Amino acid sequence: MTTAQLAAFRQAVTDSKAISDDRGYAHWSGIHGWPGPVYCKHNSILFLPWHRAYLYLFEKSLQDQVADVTLPWWDWTSATSHTSGIPDAYTDTSAGNPLLNAPVSITADQITLLRDDYPGTISDGAPPTTVRDPGTPDELPRAATIESVLNAPRFDDFTNRLENVHNTVHGWVGGSMSMIPVAAFDPVFWAHHAMIDRLWFLWQTRHPSVTPQASILNTALDPFPFTVAQVLDTSQLGYTYAVAAIS
Image (cartoon, rainbow, N blue to C red; front, side, top):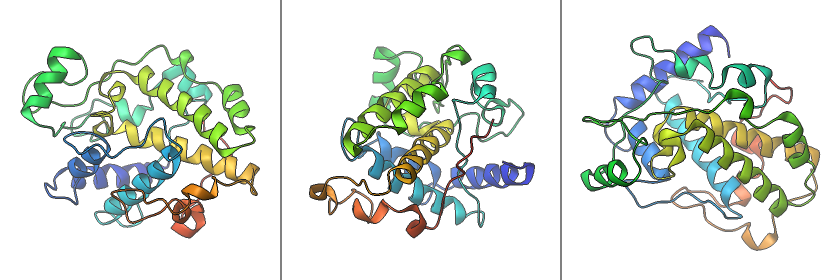
């Protein structure tokens, strides 16, 4: 991501955070989990299609703020990640960095539950914000692991194996990212899931004749206006991914 692209992305996130209705950052983050209803699909054959629709529409909402802005992806297999961990753009503590954290817009009862039963998942004070507690950088998933996942011959096998890797990164980041109900409020959530979506794209490129089972193709991806079949081809959604890794 160039300096100009990063600046545009940061501006889009900043503008989105300032919107309090269903066009804004808090609304889009809340679709994943709390304040509810919880729509996200995990431990499900719909895991990849649902999150692709989610990313696509969130990116479109950012483009309403800054034209042509795109979601960056975090390659946690790269040498840089295994040395430094979370990308600098998301850890920069300079005043006004919208990627460092975000307010967690959930109910008072949900805030109390997290603080009492899952301490360290949101900040103290009001309003609560996202927090992180990352592990050692070299514990992030390795390229060899992902290469093995990409060789999975069936969609269901690939989905299960990739979701396991996905879970590992959520746990590694820690804090808010370790809790499904509030994970999407952390700005790094979107970069992590863009990487997951990219890996699905790479798997599709490697296995062009393999698709999800026919029985789920017409399944609606609530609350989005898409079925599984409608999100299978990223070119039909108007985007693609770089094949080469970015260190």
